[in-house]
Length: 75
Image (cartoon, rainbow, N blue to C red):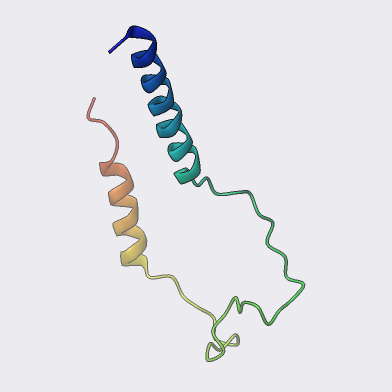
């Protein structure tokens, strides 16, 4: 096989791989969420009662604080 033919085949193969990679690469776009249509999504479940005040679970807060402290490097 001549060198020119080998270069051409390599170039065509490289362009094919690059074009497939570009076609397969799906990057998420930035989107703005708006509340114009309230029926599209519901921020709270319909069965949720807004009159009840939610109290934080102190054990859960302490557990999360312990996990965040455990992620620090030991120095």
